[in-house]
Image (cartoon, rainbow, N blue to C red):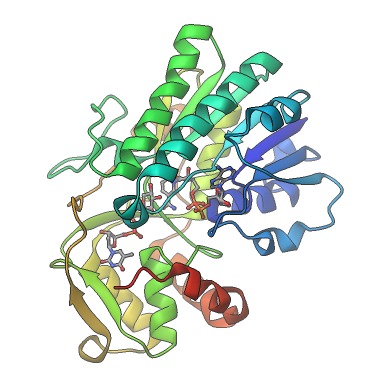
Length: 330
Ligand code: NAD
Ligand code: TDX
C-alpha cells in the first residue's frame, strides 16, 4: 500500500505521517508514504525528523497546484490524505490570495490527478469553520455551510469540490471536519503554541476582543485517529465531524495556560483589538463518527495540555527560530 500525504511537513500532517510510519495505525502497518509539501513558512522538515531515513518515506518538495508534478507523482498511490493548506485565519484577513490558490485550486489539481490515476480513496481534511459560528447547540454534518473568513471560505470551496467529485465522477471521497487542534509541533502562530511560548519567555499574550470566543479543543493524535478511521471505514461521499468535546472561552484557555507555565494574569495578558469577523463559538456534534466508526477522543484536555506545555518547554530549539516567522504584529 502506498499513501500520498499532502502537507505532511505541517503540524497535523506530520503527526499523521510519524504515527503511520511507526505502526500506530495497524491496518496500514508496512505502508509506504509519499509526502508532498511546498515547505511554506509553516512547513518544516524537522517535523519529520523522527522518521527521517525510514525507507518507507519519500519526501517531495513541491506545490499541490503544480498539475505537472502532481500528475507525475499520483500513479501508484492507493490513497490520498490531503492536509496541505494555508491554515491561519489571521493571515487570510491580511491577504486571501494564497488561500484561494492553495486551498481551492490545489485541491482541484489533486482531485483531477487522483481521478486520472484511479486512486482508490481520497480523504479531504476540512474544518468546522466551514459551518460559520453557532450560538447554541452543536453542528451536525447536515448543517448548512456559512464560512465567515477568507480562510474558511476557501476551505468550504475545497470541501465542496471534494464532495462534488464523488457525486459527479463517483470518486471515493471522504471529508472530515475537525475542531481546533493542539499538540506537539504546532506552528507558534496558533493561539496555544503562541501563548505558551510567549509565557515561557516571560512575554505577554494578546487576547482578542473580550476573550469570550469559544473553541472546541481536540488533541492532534485524536484528530489523526479519527482521520484514519474515516479513511479505512468511512462511507464514500460522506462527511464526518471530528471534535474533542472540550469547549472553553479564550479567557478560560488563557487561565489554563497561565497555570501550566506558572504565570499570573495581570503581568501576562493584554487585551487587543478583536479579529475582524471573529467567529464567536464553534461546537461540533461527533455522534456520527462515534456511532458509525467507533471514534472516541482518548486524550483529556488536562493531560493533553500538560504534555503539550512540557513539550514546548523542552523543545525551545524547535520553536525559537520559528517565532520570527510567526510574528503578525499584535
Ligand atoms: P500547517 O499550516 O501546520 O501545515 C500546512 C502544511 O501544508 C505545511 O507543511 C505547508 O508547507 C503545506 N502547504 C501549504 N501550501 C502548500 C502547497 N501549495 N503545496 C504543498 N504543500 C503546501 O497546518 P495544520 O494545522 O497542520 O493543518 C492541516 C490541515 O488541517 C489543513 O487543511 C487545515 O485547514 C486543517 N485544519 C486544521 C486545524 C487546526 O486546528 N490546526 C483545524 C481544522 C482543520
Ligand atoms: O493571538 C491570538 N489571540 C487570540 O485571542 C490568536 C492567534 C488567537 N486568538 C483567539 C482567536 C480564536 O478565537 O484564539 C482562538 C483560536 O485562534 P487560532 O489559534 O488562530 O485558531 P482558529 O482561528 O480558531 O482556527 C483554527 O481552528 C480551525 C485553525 O487555525 C484552523 O486552521 C482550523 O481550521
